[in-house]
Length: 233
Image 1: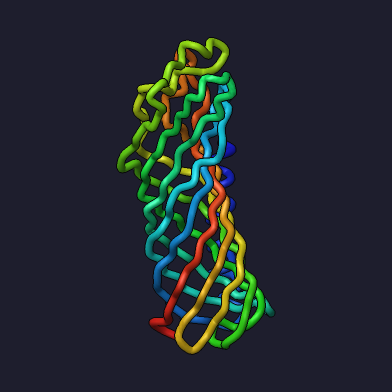
Image 2: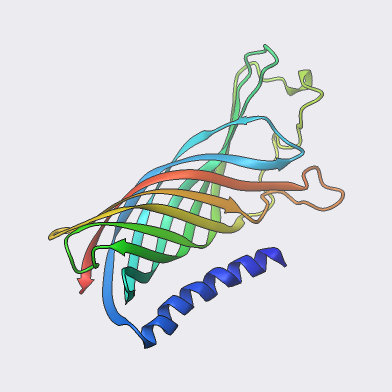
């Protein structure tokens, strides 16, 4: 119920900005498209807990943004993306064995974000601050385990081992994405730099009463750069 409520509030807020303000304030019809690229520092929210370090992965894809309203100094729009997103986790093993273990999960990620910008108008050159917030769905393409040649988890009886040698049960992933950044608008397009956070609401493994993990959800911090050019202004 809480997951559905959070998603509903985000969608409602976006529609409110798009429609309610649209009845009262300055209309915009600015459509921009382009590409994005960056990195994810990801981990997995496990219960029982697994000691981890951040796993660095790639992220890149296509972006489309439609700016529709201006309310005083705030510009409202919607942003949609289709990205290739690497996630997963790297375990922190401190038993002196020298063992290493990581799992890379490769996703197609589709966020739908409310985009709020403050500063220069989207038609003007200059710098503005922006916020992105909304739901995201993803589909698992592939996964890969990486482990040291001396790998022997039997020497760690107090650490969870239910993740080893077991592929993800669920290929569909969903969660909430939020980000903030700066945009520089020029005569040749828009250059954006953004910090982003993803909080998974679904699990990659089954989480029933008889299953090993009660939670196994993706999470990551991301940094990305985007370039957009205008189709309509």
